[in-house]
Image 1: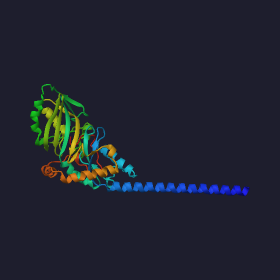
Image 2 (image 1 turned 45 degrees about the vertical axis):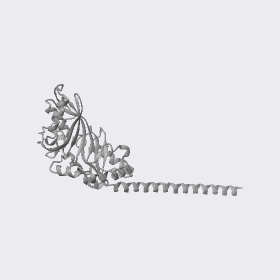
Image 3 (image 1 turned 180 degrees about the vertical axis):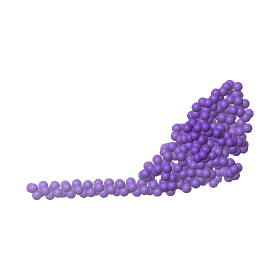
Image 4 (image 1 turned 90 degrees about the vertical axis):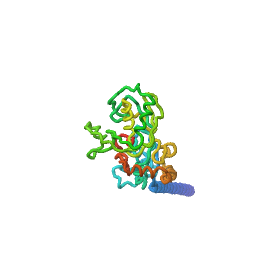
Length: 329
């Protein structure tokens, strides 16, 4: 009897061992499959190369948004986070082609892989904005994030007054960049110097191009502009200059970039839920052919080849934000 019980116990133990070995084998296979999946995802991520567009909401700076995108892609690929300060050692190269302020929204052009080397051409291309200005107030940053420095009456300003002066700001014009910008003095950004309380002299006026400018809405004190401009242009300076031309003052309240180069807000700007390796791969397939067929690119490059590109627009590789100050805005 004892022998029978021993045999039965041995058989039960053998079955248990077999199940354990089978489970272990299955677990090992699952781990191996997961590792292979991560390896494949990492390989696909690192193979991505080109230029596409994402949607930037209010809140994060352009650099912060870029970091969020990068972190999400690396996590999906099972790759460790990368130190943004070690650009040359980064496996995944990513950058943006034209800063948007933290308070601004819209199209942010992104280069990935070898696409980061294509961003310079995006900087000199055409950009479109919808900007809402407020009459009667001026701020130190020329937008709603700054401190009010001046207030003037605006009741006398009519819609036809604004429409009548827009031609002065259209075409090849001269523009003074804002003090709060990423332009540099002695190697330091003007915005950084301003925040330190240092006295900063305005940069001299420089040539910029406005291709079209129209008034879309006027509900005093607010007025909304539709602007198409070239590289190195500041919407904040435009709104401020319009206020001065009207014998008042004005500052930007809302700003949305609706188009940069061939990429539009409606058709090409990826929302965060599409920030996946496959999502970006599909976007690259859709966006890259546009660069070769955009009819205005060559013309814009030729026309703007002599125009300076603002330093905040020079964004190759992992970009450092300019302390939340709008770039070409």
